[in-house]
Image 1 (cartoon, rainbow, N blue to C red):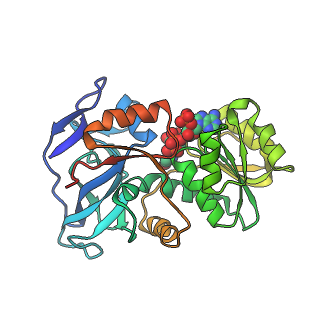
Image 2: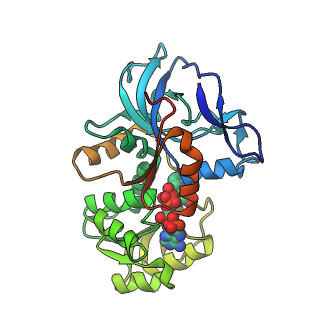
Length: 316
Ligand SMILES: NC(=O)c1ccc[n+]([C@@H]2O[C@H](COP(=O)([O-])OP(=O)(O)OC[C@H]3O[C@@H](n4cnc5c(N)ncnc54)[C@H](OP(=O)(O)O)[C@@H]3O)[C@@H](O)[C@H]2O)c1
């Protein structure tokens, strides 16, 4: 099957023909009709996980998937051949990813049924970023009426976090530079927008929300920046999340945790519920063919608002 793979370290990924995966007893084989690029994929391609994760060369990478179940193992009951599904994969090695015509996934994890009415490219750009955003907000345990600051609101995870926060009745302070970024986050429902490029972001948040915010979803800060911003903007007793620092700094009066995305069916189904109720959209700003994956990565590196959709290698 056609795939985008890492053949070895210190070499850019290449398109190649590789053997198709065989679904195990408890696995479903999904034809990948749509996917997207995430910063994690960029990190994988750069080789930063070489000492931490086994790389099964030629390693198919890629996380997000939308497609159709093509075959199921003998013990699979939750999914059937022909089911339209979406989700994302998470493995403890690099390989068997979604930049390929077919991917094998455990049937009790990774994918669930695709909401009706959701376009294929939207479903392919949904999984990883939306579930991560939901997990961040869950950790904050905020009640309707509370205020949340989303730092990095213009990107994939942030764009979902802003919408999910609004749908949960929160007041949202979001980052965005003046112009297209500000319009984007206001369009998603942000109540106040702070321009992070203008300098002191914590001061701007306190201007927008005097007295501080009840929780913070941070998607972009350095470890030092995270400690400073959380310490200055989150109320004492409040909570904050990071998606970037395994060992987050200690901030007095603030519970700060690292969120690791998990492709649980229950979380994917909650995301689908927000979509079904019209409370969530998939903010795709760029679309690429599968053969254009290198261009999609270039776009991600140079900075793009919202999500970058990529057609799957298995698209018919
Ligand atoms: N732990 C996990 O399981 C997990 C899961 C998903 C994501 N992540 C991580 O979470 C982070 C966000 O992911 P993503 O998919 O949302 O990435 P993304 O789509 O690249 O979004 C990041 C956004 O933040 C903006 N930005 C850059 N510097 C900023 C700053 N100083 N202040 C405010 N905004 C800034 C970027 O603008 P420009 O594009 O103009 O630079 C971009 O719009 C990444 O580091 C990713 O690796 C972790």
